[in-house]
Length: 238
Image (cartoon, rainbow, N blue to C red; front, side, top):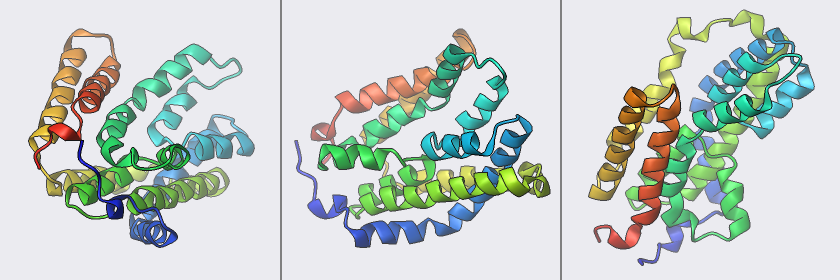
């Protein structure tokens, strides 16, 4: 198995701070969507402590919005767990694609980094790694910037969110999608990556057509994640 250049996985304060600063612009849009969540949480009768704990510990926007639909006097624990897992199943695929670099870190740092991985910092760090550039600072530092933005926005939304009740009406819901698309198109197109994503997409489509609702998310993530874990870097092109 190829050894990874230590420079690519450097996790120094300098690299983390650099990644943090690079993610500040997109964090502004994260704040706006977090405001919408904070407002929705208040309308669902969550108290401020529960809202902030959810945003700080869960840190998963789509899953948190889905949970609000299930929230009530009696919370259905099993459906809630299944829903959150289904929505976040894509992290299985993210973890598989990051493994060649994460394995170089001590276990504590490895899982510490993964606590703040989201779509945006995953995409940007993968682009850096595949281009032979340091990406761990982007992954962790960028994740910290996004996490702080989400927590801040949630609090602002809970307190003052009535000013932005529908961010999608401003077209802001397209920002993250366009950002991720740009990262994917600009990244390295190795046969391994293309095949993994194709398998994930194919499995997801089959599940969408033939399996119960929402199962396509879990199916696609599992298919791509398992293939990525089995087909490691030693089979990659040199």
